[in-house]
Image (cartoon, rainbow, N blue to C red):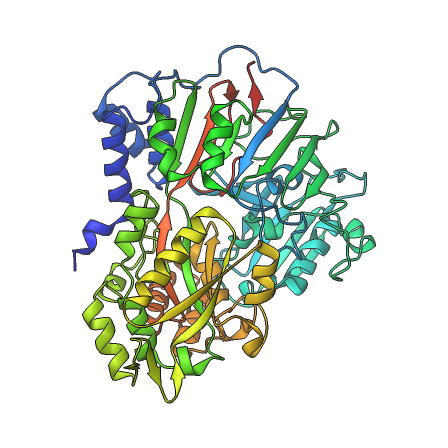
Length: 580
């Protein structure tokens, strides 16, 4: 095992940034933003910049002059055409199973992250926390309305936040330490059951987007027949919901009455420059770069890693890449105990997986293997997880044999009359199919047959989310979340069976680590609980961790101020304009 110093995400990240900057792969501006995104202070980042030299008007991957100050005055108008690597989810923060980049246009959250990863206002004009950590207060601007013209004062904001906490499939479990929301004048007050360091994190995500609660109720609320998020959506962001066509596209249109964001780094405080933004669903990886290069797209989220070198060499394009809070992992439904009920079997399957090989072959090196639940880039990453789950085919066979599995006449393992063969669902995107096929092949090498079932996103959730044996035995899931512990807690908690604990796993030591984290009112206590959580996950294996990929974005050089950064999953669009 390597020393923990070699896995410090800040050290690794800064080292990589320096190497990329000095080799000309990234601009000075991207270099500086990357240093800040790693959590370095402005002073520390400035010192590193000075030490590395270079001018303030560096060049991008492709040699283009960067937008440190966008040339000319912003132009109003035009539709930004963006390629998206997944199918689109409904625009309802409460009932959706995923939130897409359109949420960044339609909605605001009460607070958000800045370039340093610090909490700053977005819809709220200010926020504070009491010294004992038991009360959070958010100041709500007076006179604000949603797209429909409905009031969005403190009363409405408190009600939508309380509804999210009480109703959404993520809200309740991920906010256990929160008591609830109330209103005092023009402020929303969040009372805590106990001081908890993670209280603000969920509020920055699309699942806590500020929808107009009256519109949400009128459209059907949480009823499965509700049209909210499909036919209509009503937020406070700079664009309005216009079209939502699964398998095809999503379209949003500028809200001319937008009063402006309270987010410090958003410079355009009025209505957006763009007329509209359209996201095209492109699940076939090879088509994404082609459509960008042919001029059919202006921006692209998630190009195929196989195309990156070519895109970086195109002088008309800029590639942006940074660490991503994401991971691929395999669910193992414990209601199939004949397959996944014992730890030895799960460990045997885990040792059969060549994670680094998949990173190299599928991601072209643009990621890292994961041996526990977290990506290496997380500030609380526990490097001791790397003592677990290393690739070792002979150890995999030994563990499986110790668990009682014996090869049959055709080489497939059997135990107590059960053949080790099961169905395995995967979402219909190029990358996920590649990962799933690689996993199935590696399982086959140790005598295990995983029969791939490729389905679209909605069917995936149906087949992975059922109770008991109604859910698939195994599924590949790609998670994406700005604070890994927040989302992995709800995947691993026994409270969330069957959704989103798709493995139906009950692990008392993991539950205990979650409980400890929920009581963590200091950074130190949070780190301790996080470490326990990661090590128990790596050992007990409620899921099989696979790998983490890097966030990658590409834009035409005429697109200005489209600025993805590490603390947000998606770009924001109010400052974006096109010089063409």
